Image (tube, rainbow, N blue to C red; front, side, top):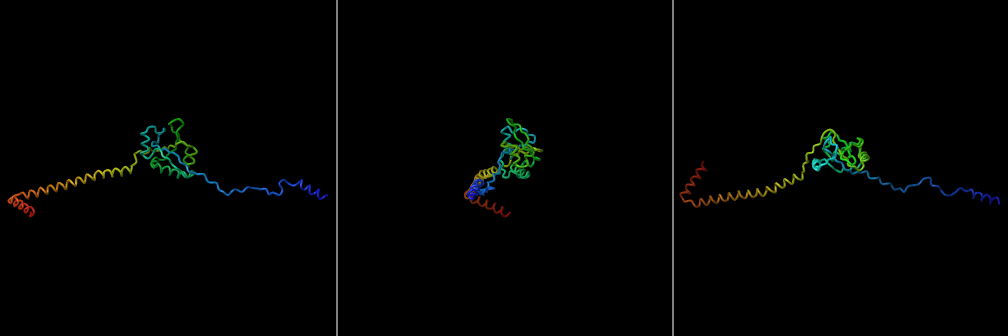
Length: 217
């Protein structure tokens, strides 16, 4: 009897979920999370004047900038946290004439306006720093010390085309000139022969003497 009462008490006071092992921590599935892409493609607009305070308003001004290697370009950054020097090198690679401006600053357009405002110099630290300050807004680049040259860049493809056109035009002209020269010489030669053949014996002797005198001299 006592043994039955002891077993009943043991059952009544047994801990909840007794016999089951509690998991102190969960084990992951083993799959690594893919790292988010760090590339960033954004529109940059390089200005020419160090005192420019408005976005280019006329078509001629925009075309002059584009022809001079400035204006609007899309730049892709594969490392958002690269150093300031690397960031600058990428920008200057897209706008080589920026190296002549004595430094540059970043700007953006004010809302509902053509006015430009400077962005904090901290934005030059990295592409990520710029992105955090501009979002999707177009970034304008303005030289600090000197205006940039807007002379149109030489178009190599056009130069090659011009040379090819000149060659195509000149070649037929040279062929024609050569043909006319040969024809003229031929006519002169035939005329000379005909003249000699029609000469009388006395005239032929006279011409022969002149020829001998000329060759002997």
